[in-house]
Image (tube, rainbow, N blue to C red; front, side, top):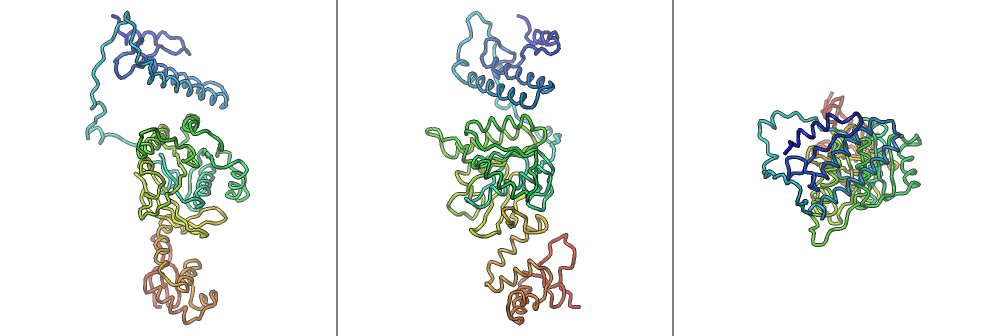
Length: 435
């Protein structure tokens, strides 16, 4: 019997330039390529297609031609995988074919020890929006009409132009693919023109508004094939539009987790990329914002990070709660202006402090709340200025300001002057000076 490795090696070396060598891939049941094994042949076909794709990447075709080639290749690979998993793989080999004995595979083949782990050098986490959106599969969750699509659109514009996300966070320019599956081109144009404040829309942001649910994974895979090396942001609006129906007898958690895992695996195939799926909150209220994700915990459990946007009806203020495997958990205050979302603060740290100030202010009476909000919005001020602006009694305002200061809600940099409490890193004095 001729050694398969030697035969395949000779074939590869003898192959002329531009000609694909003989396949060397094999299935888990065989050490070497087995011509009569359907699964070996399926693996080798996938190997050949990968090599062919690499050759195509260096040719002179247009992006459209390469995109069509990828679509054809994807359809062929899906058919091959179905053939591998179907009845064809169960056909016995012809009697005259020589059967190569398979080597038993240990379930511990993928085990590694601490020495190996300690020696690895992993790249740092890629941030698309520092502190908010990282690489991987993430969820942007909120109640209907809470402003999720406006926030997703703002992130898309910022990343595709290399501007500022949420008005304050600088981001690097990268390709953005927005699958707005609940919008038409007219509504999408109106929303993005509003967010662009009259400026031209960036060429780096790409859109699709129609796609069948079973097509979306392939669409995302093709986009990652073309742009994955540039670490793109992909926005799926909404997740419910592509959620497959639950199989008969399948548990809801298993179905949700399987769907989320497929999207995560797809995103992880292009390190540094992010797939942000817009999703709805459940109707029942919960003290844990992760439990607010609609569906079972399988969806949130499969995601790398979760963003939950909470906004009361008819209010322009909101809170964005952030958590994840590698993302620091925190809550950030936001404010809406003409549909666009901005951090309510100078930076993330100040925005987080604003959340706490809002909670404290929620326990105040209406007049005290008005005074407190005036100080927060207008910086250093005096009782007389506040009283005139709010048409209130000067003495009453003075007493309320003193109470707010005594309770630690505002600062008094000098006698008779009040301002918001400054966060770490801000310039200026934060304590009282009775000079």
